[in-house]
Image (cartoon, rainbow, N blue to C red; front, side):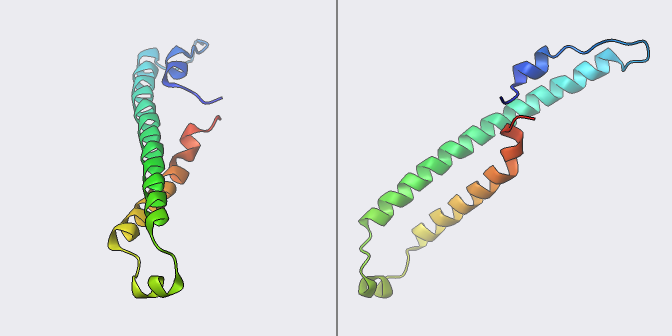
Length: 104
């Protein structure tokens, strides 16, 4: 199960005599919650964008004629190259941020 910003917010810690400054910890956790929520939202947006680009690329490939002679005569369009590059970059970002959405 993945942590949510609410899980972080609602986490209670035991108090001890030699513990940390409660206000300082709470301020830090507030920042963690905000950053974590932003990363989760960004990750979801990237996943949606990746899906849309994959669908767009699939539609493009469906409409492209794939005979060898036509492929040799018509190199891959610049748009298609750009979309493939964007998809590769999004996948790379997803791999980098994957640990943020996996349970600890």
